[in-house]
Image 1 (tube, one colour):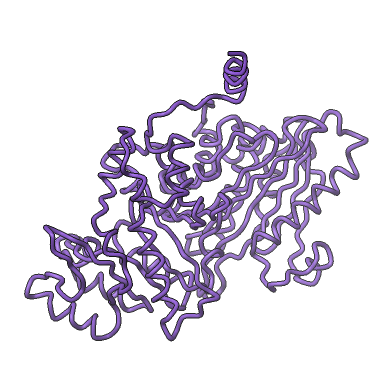
Image 2: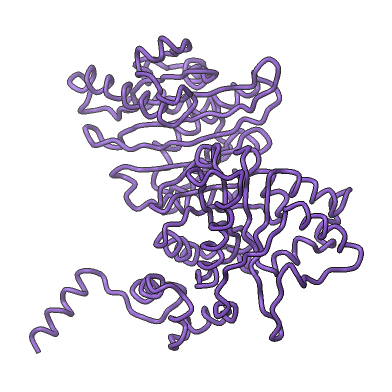
Length: 488
């Protein structure tokens, strides 16, 4: 549903509009560096019409006494935010439901944030959330976001935090009919060089139609972040939390659809990755990565249904999915290396390896391919290379073709255990063409089923994925058809 987004509405105007809306009433709880959201409402005027209570339990002991301890010992985490929201919202309802519940839209806003420290040796980030009603006495909804604060000054970071807090509250009450507009409005009065939003989750009875996976896509598409993630169950993940201290094994591709080749790459790549002496197999997470470039496929915009089709398939085989705007491998590795200090594995095909060694792709870097490789291979990273067949000939690392000037560099990486062939592969899979499989699926012709896992083939047929020609009936239509057939 289209909702007009007034980009010219400033932070003070938004806070004042909320203050003057006598229905909207609730509490603010801000811990850590997040003291500025409630302050914006006080400064706007008329705050008594909105604020039932505002508080900040800055000391950890005080915070634990109110919200309970965190088993992890970390306070800037989603679990802490949700405890705060639940506690404060429950108090609002307990204390005010009888007095003004029939006419009010209750809310509880919370954030838990760490800003830049005095030494400027950390990264500012935080969790913000709102629990709110859209109808008096109705069940609540939740919107939760995770942000990174990029200003090189703690005061500026706190100011940005106050702005995005006001934007969040305003968006939930005035842009709720359009989740994409809600999302876009979060950056009003801010710029992408000040704040990144790398996770958003919307849930509740008024948002049953919302697919949080699409919102994750929008985060990357609109430049709010370079990376978004969600698990096999479709639940959105905050990338740094999901990959924290994990061994990451990643496969990049169009995956349209995932075929037996991709499954073989993952299975055997994982086996060799786990066998590495510095890998703890209990801490390995496998990730399938879709880049914006692969999602667009040469088109101007992204086909959202096609995106969800791919994700549904990946979820059906238990894959964690990452969406990124990192076309270059060295930028991808630089991001992954920020989230974990342990070993990272990349599963690539020979065509991907050719791309990595193509010098023309690094013309924008002052140091060219060497600058790229200093990032890609200086970390604890290893490439696992799956063979390919071209013109009837199999290519592996053993006969990988390179210009003469790059051969010593490739030999160095092989000798230093940075690149390794995937050994136990199924040669029959090398003849599978993903483009050919997709073409057969779209035409509804037989023969493609043998090239994909059984569960994937069934899902494509049952749900008419990737343009497979079939008719899907709504439940009521299906019931009428079933009854009509039964009466024959």
